[in-house]
Length: 190
Image: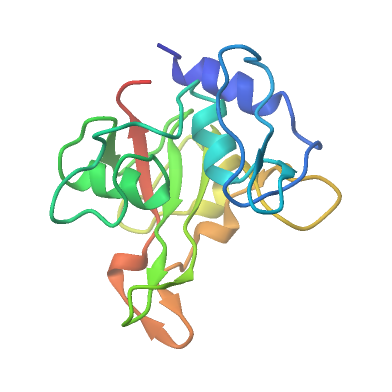
């Protein structure tokens, strides 16, 4: 099992490198220091947020048959932002919700789906690499956390910086829903 400290060390290895490709990136036992994969139909070689912050950092395959099975599930058999949150809120097989972040925790916001259940905002995740000495549970100061994440834009996909993007995730296109908020997830097993 990978410890949170080891996961952070792994996440820091590729800062300033890589290409973002939605649906790509994973842990590969045959090449454990490379998160990059290709994803059909474009076969662009890269990584996405989940492929990097959890799969690669914690050495955990994205595909997990039987994971997050239940009437609450929007995604089963695969680990991603949505299935991780749902697992933390139900079975707690791999993840648990916490109020105060520690090194190696994941900041995650869910996808937002329209009335037709089609995604209109994809979820996102980052791994916490530095935590301030004080943390107010009643008013989380995500901007004080330092994270590593994989995201599009810029010259490299893997970025290190403050988690300011994880604040105020409850609003989208003029609507507010508490279900859209950022969660702090602790990895229970990897």
